[in-house]
Image (cartoon, rainbow, N blue to C red; front, side, top):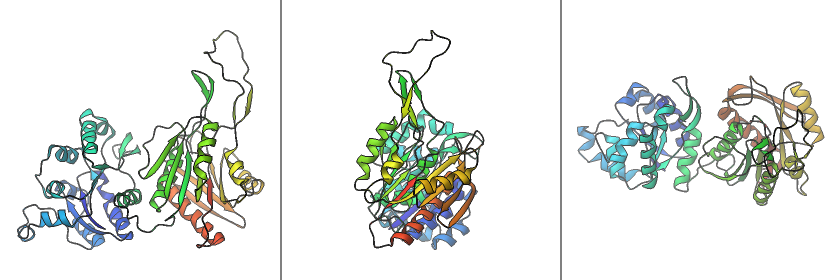
Length: 411
């Protein structure tokens, strides 16, 4: 695949060398076109080293333009990718302006165009930016992200550029050329987020899961070439590009949706924090605050882990133990009791695990373990997918039909 990579003037430009490497790993030829402001954040020397091609930036480059090189690049490209894409470049493309080489190529190309926005959360939510996004999408331009999380300015919210490996996987999907990944050709079903178990029309039982770990795992699976179905409880997250999302609310709904998707799946990754109990009866009208105390009778929710592990042909199964104490001890017991192939253990509480962008984990299996120190959930998800795939292929062999199940119940 021939990719014109446009780099604009945002702090996320520091990720550009890694993005180039991810694209080239998948077999792409990458020609970088920088704006003047991008050169304030990343050097052309570094980018030329990783791309293997001279960097283009000047629309009035006499030697290059002697052969109408901006038209040549527009025709050469299979995809034009702009990452990071600032609010400014989005506005320029919407208006049809072409004051520089990059926007001129966007006007002159017939190839798919993809933008990976990166900006402050307030800039992203601004009505003008959102109006420009809607226009771009209406014109068939692909918007990849942005992600939600901490930002360079110290604030937190939507506006982060997605991780390079996920951007690369999404771009290759635009033209049907995924490249090679550890999960190439596999269908992966992922569950993520919390469930809500209704008490009455306005109240429910839930937990502190944000869905971030599960969404990161889904994104990591896409980046490794998998076809991903994401069964998601209620979260405030953007859908990972390249996934088919099925939204559910209760544990019973998640159970049904998961079993509907799992029939022809190769891999099952249950990253949801499914409620253990639900009210026996749901009151039809709002419960009034009349008594000093009240009791609520609960019953067990369906156990998705047990139902998958009990299938006639059991898949390669990896559990997840989210604990507040005795993390390794409890995880080892769950590994043995549930007859799992692997379990991922981590501590959760007010200061770790939940509602954060980072996490740590200890992975256990029969006769071994591996510890992952605190890192971003995106990076941790990438490591967990790679490790699970490694053990799956070691046990099942690369010629067998996949049967990897990662069961996680913490975000």
